[in-house]
Amino acid sequence: MAPGSKRATATASKKLETAPYIFYKDRLGTYKNYIYDEEPHATCTSKALARAGFISTGEDAGKCPFCLKELCFDANDDPWEEHKKRGAECAFVLLGKLDETTLTVADTIKLAQTAVIMAKYEEQVKIVNGLESRASSENLYDSILKALKQKPARTTTRRAK
Image 1 (cartoon, rainbow, N blue to C red):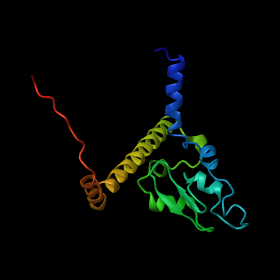
Image 2: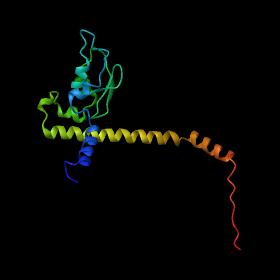
Image 3: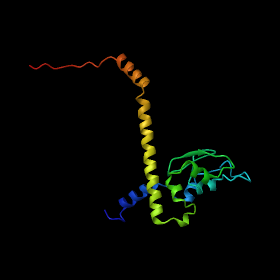
Image 4: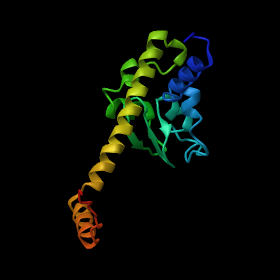
């Protein structure tokens, strides 16, 4: 398929959707009415969180799409210092470039790859957790009891003439 075709463009768009938080403005866009933005002396603002690599996951919480570390913050926390402390192996932290204008193409590709891998990992964890909860001994016991209480379906066999 030619690179400019509709199908190739749709595939490229789908790939971009899986890693939408590479850039600061996209991470910042996840914060709406952040709890500490109105506090005059707060250091933990939505801008500071987004700059430190976090996306919004709640009133005072943020998650890094590159390491999946989710933290709750206080108004006086420094999001970058907290991220470095608790996510020392994070690709975003290891890169250490809070100013995205200094990102190279290689940096951007690395962050995109990491975000996609982590998003896929998170999907797989959800699937495994769902399977584990359905396969718990209590659920299996209930399923067996339910199956035993049902009348077996009548099967008819034809005899050969």
